[in-house]
Length: 139
Image (cartoon, rainbow, N blue to C red; front, side, top):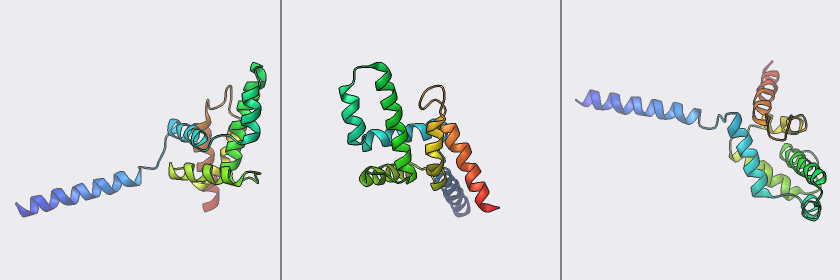
């Protein structure tokens, strides 16, 4: 009976450890959701937020929202920014949600090439390009 109990305990520990290893492997939707949550938590910078709140032209609002997304991605990647607090917040939020450093580096390029609308295929781009970047490091 003790052997059986020990075997069950060992199997539980092994499966639990395996589950923890995959806990931060975000899927495409998880990467997009983490980015949107980080933008919502950290907020926009004052330059874009002020202009976005004053405009009533739909084309201008759309362009400013795209600029907000690109600026947040640049801050997350550590591209030189005028707002260090925003960059630190974005990096902290995204790494806390499971983004790797390689995924943060490709985030600006993925947000700029996301088509047809913002956040349409962001997760797939970040995942594949991040994997490519990490693969290039090992060789």
